[in-house]
Length: 150
Image 1 (cartoon, helix red, strand yellow):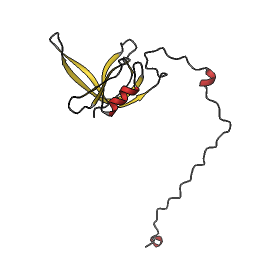
Image 2 (spheres, one colour; image 1 turned 90 degrees about the vertical axis):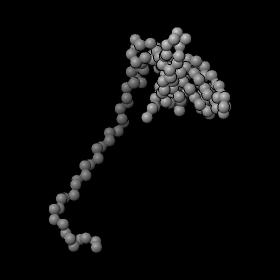
Image 3 (spheres, one colour; image 1 turned 135 degrees about the vertical axis):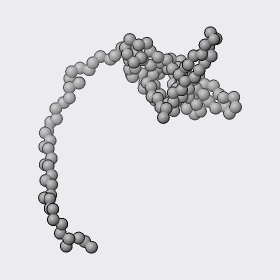
Image 4 (cartoon, one colour; image 1 turned 120 degrees about the vertical axis):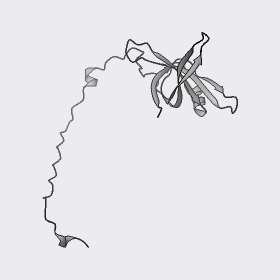
């Protein structure tokens, strides 16, 4: 199964276009997400949405939005003018979720730590008693065939 989920920031405004034959909507945009290690540069990825999802992406998502995208990852080979072939990754959206402005993808400065009072859990006002352990019924190795219901 080919399934990919990424948390990213939209770096190119979604562009809406249509196929020639059946006029299906296609939304195309670029997203950026942090590298695996802090010293790695951010990675960029082309993202496509099709049909009604493409229209939703074009209307509701914009440059700078932080999103979680679920979809199918594919590799395309592109002929370059320099005379060589280049492979480019592309993500086809199946679901997209907005994270809002407060999400941190590791690209911005981290928020300050909460105060110790807010971080410390409050003790419970009443103590709960542990439930009594149930005693197992006594094991009876002999079967009484007179008690069988048939």
